[in-house]
Amino acid sequence: MGHDVSTIGNHKLDTSSIENLAKDLSVRFEANVEYGIYDDVWFDWDGFEREASHEFTFFGTIIYPGATKTLKLFDKFFQHHIVINRYGKLASRLPYFSKYKHNLVELEDAIDSVCFEIYDYDNGIDFGTIYNNIFWDFLNHFDARWWSFCRAFTVLNGVYEHKTWNEIYESTMFQYRKDIRALFMKIGGTEVVYVDNQGKSQYISETYMDWEMIVKELDDNFKDTCLNVSEFMKKKRLLPENEYPLAFYDDFADLTD
Image 1 (spheres, helix red, strand yellow):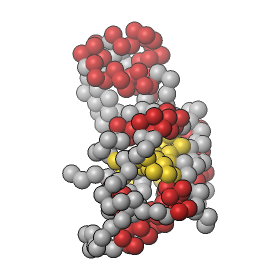
Image 2: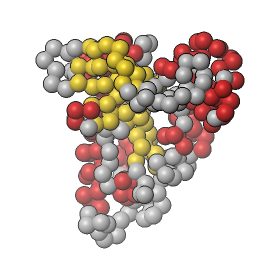
Image 3: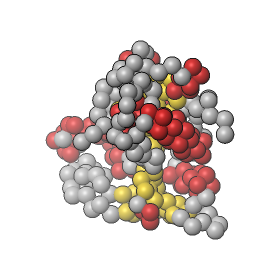
Image 4: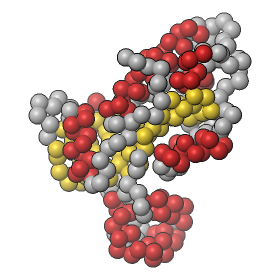
């Protein structure tokens, strides 16, 4: 499998409750929003092991007048919160979590956090995941993948996969970034990071972190290997060929339209 671009950014969505989030998303995306839970956990509300039903339980629907699409919103931590509210600190000692200790990480993450997933099933689209104040974007995939994304910032001799450097540059700097910016502006976001889903920065896209933690992680561990995209665009000084950044930060400051 090849390396792909994982995009994570901040947002201003109302996550105070799943109903409030559904209302917020409905207005922002001009869509109906069905909200509830998707049963994909293997423990019951008393912490005993059981088989997940993989069924969707509806809590309600927010109707947007004249909407032509319907989004589905899942509360990923719903069952976790029930167990935590029932048993408090003892939740980690319940039978399921005592047996499968690797699942304790998600239980502990859920204690003071929220996590929701958004889908457009009618069109086969996975919008992404909301965790506290960050949004993992699964909607805007960079078709040319991670290494081609990196090559937009580096010297490229000749043609790569039937594309010239200029074609890679144009598709990355303008088409892709504008799509990303449009989505994050819609949810109140102002900044994103691009990380390699199978490289040294991949753990950032696989670990529950708040936005402030992600920015600090880049500053602490990728200070010399993280490229600021909008700063790059001011000078457009290409990096040496094959000297690729390990992560990217983007506030879209250079994009004005």
